[in-house]
Image 1 (cartoon, rainbow, N blue to C red):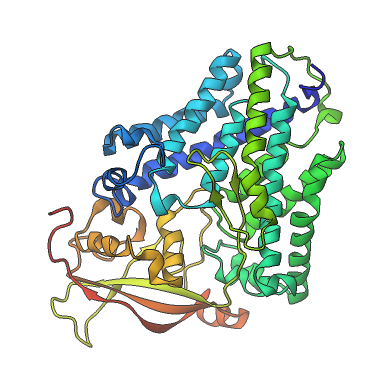
Image 2 (cartoon, rainbow, N blue to C red; image 1 turned 60 degrees about the vertical axis):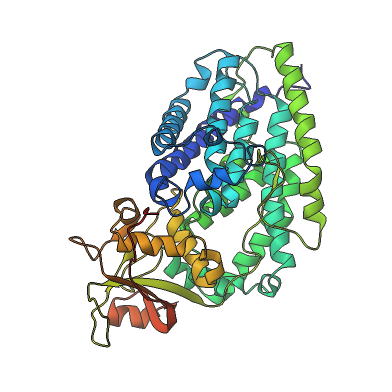
Length: 474
């Protein structure tokens, strides 16, 4: 079985599995704590309405069989508990078939959530977690040496993530080709982190060096993942360093962390740890892994065709199970940052002298004096969608109105998604939204004002609105 196993990579398998299980835990935790306001029975985009107009074969999910908020919470917390058990090593403490079943259940539960999550779950890292999670089902445990075909499929996934992101940049915004995109990116990215202000103010020659290094790591280095060791380890190491740099510079949910975990699966630590004797795999397991390998390679046709296309698409799934997908990010970079500021008043008839009080979001910029926080790998879904809504009202047409209605209704679950509710005793009578242009302050402005952002009013985004009838009333 020398052609099938890679005993030198036993530690790589452990690190990958434990890291992936940790990210599964974060994903299920995010679902459990946010779903009621977003897609619950009284949410902005309720699951029951969605499943009524979709077919199970297009969006396979156990929620097509039955939906209730209690069932969704059970699925989310069960997934989180199972993920923690796998982090603790439960997959290696049980027989191989049971271990595979645990990983399969974890994947199926999260697939059920993603496929009814609608726009709140329309991010590349959701498909990436599912694709990596599907491969993890067949990676085995201590009952057998790591299967080389699955480890190579993980590298193939990492290759598509990095190379796809590199191509979408080179083909997209001109600033990637002239190495100036990072003059703007740290300021205009969806959700800045606590160090993003400092990254933005790095010298421009360093920004150009960052962009050039990014191109090398994403367009050249991925090919070396399939080279003999230690070249593959060195290639993976460069990717890890690049991803950790991105972790420091912004909040991108678990995108960077799952890329790190994938890269670590290619690292050969045997020169430091030595060999670890493991049993040969049973025949049924070999046959199953070979069949899955063939399936993934066949399903890779459309993602490869997308990579080669001049009209390359980012973050696209080609089947309802998210088995083999296309990835990419920031094909274009914004030059300016607009933010929606949501305000309320208890004045029954707003006028020029009306006092409006601002709602505070947990992650997205709001109060100019508030330093952005670090949340990744946790995903603040509402905050991310507010960035898209500021780009164009079309991105928010389905959910922004229901969001405002729930603020007017004082909906507890919606208010839990926010950092500050300026109406703790009773909901406002009117809510409005205004669009502001944000930019980072300079060092001098920061010292003088204590503000990390400067903002200027652009226009009204939503005029003062009041509740006509209680939310949920027909």
